[in-house]
Image (cartoon, rainbow, N blue to C red; front, side):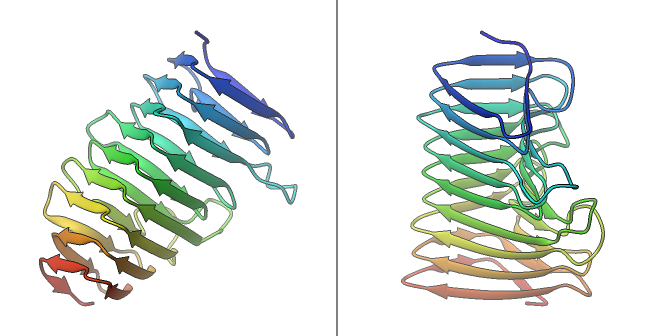
Amino acid sequence: QSARIEAREGSDIAMAGATVESSTGRGALSLSNSSATIQASTITSTNSMGLLLARDINTPTASSATVTGGSTITGLVGGANATGFNVLTVNDSTLRGTGATSYGAQLEGATLSATASTISGGQDGLRIGVDNTGVNANTVTLNNTVVTGGTGSAIVVGAFGDPGAVATINVLNGSQLNGGNGTLFQASNTSTANVNVDASALRGDVIADTGSTVSWLMQNGSSLEGNLQNV
């Protein structure tokens, strides 16, 4: 068992069967220009996010993490947060926010690929926006994955930061998007989202707020039970 872990400047962390518990700092496991492989491990933050992927904005590199093997990452604020250019891969694992206004995962100009996993937050499942340096392009692939917002939406693009978030989102192979407020997808704050739904049955509303744009494509037996607003 370990307290908070912080990795910087090209560090490489490999953990298997580990337990990390933290009540201080940003991220029980914090990466800056570093990488991590997390297998069959439990990471918990009682004050922040469980996993933080960050970068030194003065360098061209970023961070990456692979979470696999039934790992569970939880945080009061959110499960995992990835800032500009960082890459998060989740396989057969769980990202969970425990606070009332928490998220399961938050992307700030980052890439998320999740397979056979669960992403849930007290408020929203997945929040997507622009990082504080203006990086706005996000890519998400959900493969047989469940994303749940407890009292909010499953996915919110433009959830924070400057206007103009851009997201390409693939919802594949039986993935589910569950919003506690009845909204499975929302685009706000003049954001742009391109969503591809493939072989998945979804239930809930899809909403594009004024000034935002959503392109919504369904194929290979996909279905949607809900309303499309401004889409």
